[in-house]
Structures are given as structure tokens and as C-alpha cells.
Amino acid sequence: MSLLSLQCRHRYASGFELDVSFELNHRFTSLFGPSGSGKTSVLSIIAGVFRPQQASVRLNGRRLLDTANGICVTPARRAIGLVFQDALLFPHLTVERNLQYGRRHRAAARRTVAYARVVDVLELGGLLRRYPRNLSGGERQRVALGRAVLSGPELLMMDEPLASLDDSLKGRILEYLQRMIAEWDIPTLFVTHSQAEVRRAAEWVVVLQQGRMVAEGPPDEALARPAPLAWGNSAGPVNLLRIEQVTAAEGHLAARVAGQDLFLPLGKPPAVSPSFVQFRPADVIVSRQDVSGLSVRNHLHGRVCQVAPVEGAIFVAVDIGQIVWAEVTPQAAAELQLAPGAEVVCLLKAHCLTLVS
Image (tube, rainbow, N blue to C red; front, side, top):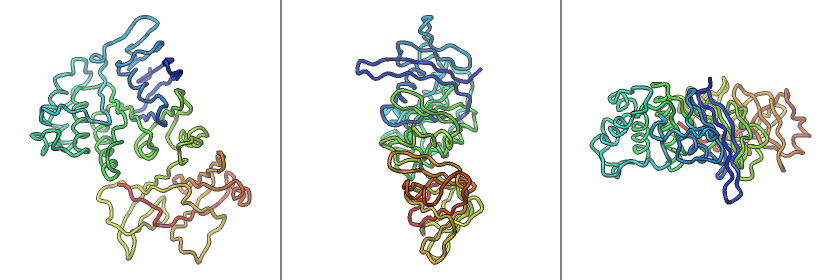
């Protein structure tokens, strides 16, 4: 029995057709795709706030929606917690009373979550007497997370919850979310159009495009398939490498990535672990042999594991212990004989790397 199964089909007056089917069994799944691909519509169907022309939704074997047999469980009895881009807190209630609202509205809950533990895990103790207008964006999202968890959901669904936050806050909120999921083992469906968020947190990803599922699987595999790579509004795959042992050195930061040295721009070492660096495939220079006498500090050795042609370019995946994506021209790929198994060196300027904690 799957955790969540969905089959839905709906044709809108605009002509857009949603035709999606999938089954989920992972604790943290991302629903990923460009704007207008149907992500929010899928969440609305699962939550029960939109009834399509044809659909079947099951959660832990329980039928929530079956249009063929006239079954439609009300949203309040679906035991699903929701967190949106706008935290949608009650402005006239304090943080404490917003959280208590989640506790009072859990008639359909299948699990019990301790209030004091939620406050502790999400570090809300100092905010309880404050009102939403006096909270930062990150604080509001933590309260929204707490309220959703306190409803005792079988499934937590989040619709672009980090989209309105500064980059410096996104990693911190993801850390809270991962801590919360691990603490209460709450299966989560996380909607986003950010590859970095998917690669950092998701165990499984369902990729939508124009109302259809075009890929699914572990993030590194699903996002490496031709359809996502060739999206017109995409810059191709996002490089996000997990780094260790970050230390300050003269004029730069130093770290280790998959057993190799990595030089970063000068800055303050991250206070949390793990940390990541993000960079574009276009910032990677590929060489068939190591080259000395260059100003480029980072020389990461690896082996080509995938070559993906798209319009006007080729994306090359290099396994260095983690996956590094490089964007090259078709001519360069041919001249360098870039094919799976080829040993290469990825050259990266330090200033192209962005530290993410």
C-alpha cells in the first residue's frame, strides 16, 4: 500500500489539461516544475479544495476522493496539514494562540504531537506573545509549520513556502523543516520551482510540465532527464555540492568536497553543518587533463557519467564523488571526446561559488 496515490484529469476552460498520476512512498517528496505546470492544482486536489472532473486520491489506503463512485471527504477530515508561501497566520492572534488553533482543529488527526516539543524544535519560545505583524518572514513560516504539525496530520503539504524569503533564510527554514520531519516522521509533499531546494532536501521528486508528469525519481536522476534540462525558462541543472571542514585561510575559505580541496571566496565560515556551495554549469570549465599555471584555484577530478544534449548546448555530468554539471558547446564536447567514462578535470573559479548554509 502506498502512502499517497493520485490519479487526476481535468480540462480547464482555457484549454489547459491536467493529467497526472503517481504514487508516493517517501518521507520527503518534492513536486517540481515551472510556473503553470500544474503543481498547485495537484495540491488543491489532494487537499480537497478543488474537485476535478476525474480523480482518485488515497492516503494510507483511505479514499479521500473517488469521482467515479461519488466519494469526496471534506478538507477538514483529510488529516492534511497545509503551509503556503504566505504563512496565512491569524493577524489578531498571538503566536501562541495561532499554534493552539492547530491543536484545537485536529479531529481527523491520526497522530498526537506535544505542544511543548513543537515550540522547542522550532525555537518559538521567545515569540509566543508576539503578533504576526511583529515577526520576520522566516519567523512567520516557523509558526505556520508549528501550527500545521500541531494539527496531527498524516501528510504535510507545502506550497512554495520559501519563495518569499531571502536566500539567507531559505537554508535555515529548510533546516527547521528537516528537523521537524525527522522528529515526528511526517510524510511531506513540498512544492517548489527551485532546483536547489529539491536537491538539498528531497528524497524523491515528481517533475511536472504543462500538466503532465515528465520525470520522477531521486533528485539527481529525475532532474537530469532531457525534459527538465531543456525547459525554456531554465538555466539547466543547478550545482549544489555538500562541503565539509570549512576553515578560514589567508584571503579565502578552504573546504573539502568528496575528498578534494575546494577554495571559496573570503567570508565568515558557516555556523551550521552541513553546508553547501552553489554554482552554474556555465561556470565550469572541463579539461581532459590537469593544467598548471592557471589562476583558477579549484581543480576537481572526476569521470563523465552522462552527456545530455539540449538546444544549442550540451550538459555534461561529472562524478567527482558528487555530481558536477558543466555546460559546453557541441563542438567542445566533440573535440574533447566527452562521453561516459571519460576522465576529466572540472575547473572552477572561487568567486563563482556561493556558500549556502
